[in-house]
Length: 104
Length: 182
Image 1: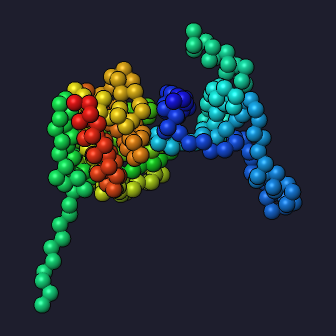
Image 2: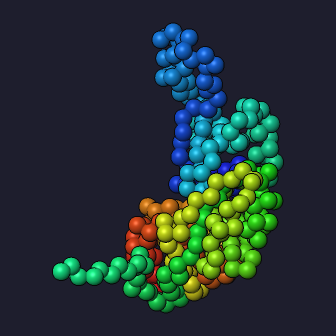
């Protein structure tokens, strides 16, 4: 079982308490009524689905119940960093260094 | 002629008891419960009104004069009081908050004895060692297929708050785990 660090509970908790909630950092267009169908479908349906590092929303459903964001590697299934919803994408190089420091 | 009807309120776990080696399961007494949500600016005002300082640290609880406040999330608490209703103290408060009476949504099971943590771990994935989950620690988590609020009241006594319709399942699961472990 994976352990996922919840930024609100401030500790690593079992994966089973969490739910995946789609790709993160997708901003809703300010004037959604003026979008063409093509633009709307891009916003609404299309996702990156990369092989490698992806930014996702997660929800600590059976815990604090808050949504937060995470950077995860889809190849290794490793969580690189988790951070509160609303924050900008973190610097992953820095996060990797922080993790390395924590591991030693 | 219609007969006079009497309606009696039954505890959802009426008649459930279990005592095994190293662990006992007891349905808790009825209690007032309130689900409280508020932004951090309202916390001091609400703490004064309730007579219990709402904890700000994750996984902690505070108990004052029989009233307990359990941290569930950064803006969410569960209040438990067996004597007086917290809702009564929140009536005239101006500070922004949402309080919902959930006294009868939940019921509780007390799991006590030296084997209590092991029995709960049969269905709950959290680390329940004293280092990670000491006395007074509380957390919403999962037990088997049911969501629970777990609260370590004393070193060897846990209180499991569970929705009443799930209580029979949780009690049965705990009893089964206790039998297997014993």
